[in-house]
Structures are given as structure tokens and as C-alpha cells.
Length: 367
Image (tube, rainbow, N blue to C red):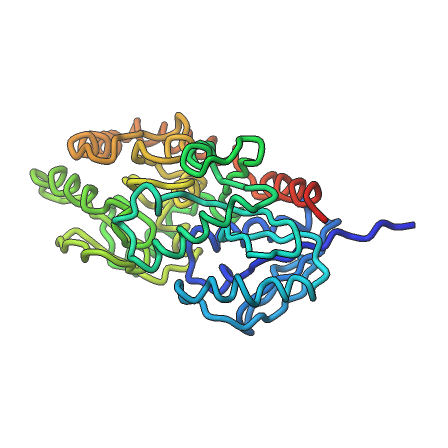
């Protein structure tokens, strides 16, 4: 007699969000599941029509109407989600936002991507702080917790009092499309966007946690005596907080598709992430997969992700950032060596491996 497949419901609301880390995580994990866990069938719970399951995934999409506004999300999670779970026949719930519903009828795997809302609450709008604190309160009810890094695991133990044996590290990975692009394609992109030959690249939502003010201050000093200043290219949607200061060498690009993002990563003289905190820092890994030299802040999981492949600088040290960026931009030998190390380091991460880890947890906690 053939055993019944495990059925897992997924809070798939991240799939309707603008591109961000949580959406990237869910797309990566689900996209790898056909290979990693063919014994699992999936039920994707979404708030409205227009969402398709990733190609090859054994899944049905169920619409559970609700709002994506932060202050209304607990209504969906508390009153609509439990009923949908009962009707779905699911054995477990995978919760990419980390939230565990009150009176949840099935065991939940909670995914906690970072604890910035507890470490740096002043950097977030009030409605975000309220929602994520609500999420943190519910995590104690999870059957198991998944985090993307050892740094985040330590923070959950220290700040939420969770025991280490309940938390499993399952890192992000760069999608297979992220790889070095031919120079000719990079040149055409630079002409299309009007970018100079040399540029430092930063990718992510423009918001205070990204610490872009420090990066601009470092670029100011680095460019002070240069006849041809190095450009800074910021890729990402505008979030909240103060507007980014304008500079003649500063370029801001929104709505960049992956095919163009690959070219930007490949053509960057340096990829920089000076964030105050990151639970993982997926753009760093994508940049390394495209062969970019990387300089990151000594914050959160960033040193853990880059290993020995990149330069790590304290997030408040402007002079340290000037020195690190200048070394890579000015010395082709250092840059070439860092490019090789980036490519090697990126190979250590795999969505398939991470999906196998998550699938193993789901099998272990199913009702």
C-alpha cells in the first residue's frame, strides 16, 4: 500500500509582495522542492487571485481573502487562516513571516528571517514594529523554527528565549541564473542606464537599516581628489526614512529585473552592503555568484555569509569604508582575487540543500 503524501499548507502571501528577502526565500525554497521533496504536496494560501505555483511544484492555490496592510494582517492570521487550514487537510503549516496562528489546527514551522525590529526598533515605522512584535509573540507556539543564519539563531535564543534544539539554520542561496555575465552585455547595460565604467553597487530597499548615509559619506571622501569620480548605483525601491542625499555621481534605479541585476552585479567594481543588521543579506550572495568583489558591514549575518571571500568593516567606521572601497577599486590584483573568492564562496549555498532541510523538519512535525 502506498503511503499518503504529506500535505503542507504555506502562507504564500510573500508571493504577492514587491521583491524582497522573504519573497526571495519562499520562491527559492518552493522552486527547489520538486527535486528536494517529491513526497510533499503543497497548498498555497494567498489573499487574492493571480498567483501561480512555481513550475513543477505539486500544488494547488487556495484564495483566502484578506488585506496585506500591516495592521490588518493579524485579522487574516487569527480569523481566516485557521479555518482555511482545517479545510485544506494539511498536515503542517509553513509560515514564511514567522507568525503562528492562535488556535492553529496543525503544527507550524515558523521562519524568522531577522530580529531587526527588536534590535533597531527606531528604524522602522510604527505599524511595522507593531506587526513584527506580534509575530515574535506567536513564535513560541511553533513546533519548529527555521532561520537563515547562525547569527539569527543566536539572537532568537538570547532575545526570545527559544531553546537551540528548536531552531534549525537553513541558509538562503542565489538562484542559478546569477552567474558572471559576458563583458559585452554589461557594456550595453551601462550605456542603456547611462552609467560610467566604474561603479560601486548597493542593492536593497532604501530605508534606514541599510545605512546608505555612511556609504555616501565614504564615497564623498573617496571621490574628493578624483578627477573621474567612482559612481554609486543604488538599486531598490524607496522605503521609508529620510531621502538619500543627491550627488552628481549617484544613480538610483528602481524596478530592475533579474536579467539586468545580473549585469549590474557582474559589472560592479565593488558590491557594498553597510547595513546595521541583516538576518542573511541575500544580495551579497547574488553579487558573489556573479563574481563581484564584496565589502560588507560587521553586522548580523553578513560576516558569516561572506566568510573569507570579502572585506568586513564596522558599520560606523567611515574611514574604514573609504580604505576598503579604495583598495578594491584601485588595485586590479586585489579585485581579481576577490572575484575568484566570491565565486568559490557562492558555491557553498544551495536552494536544494536548504529545501531538503526544511522538508525534513516538516516531515518530523506533521500531525
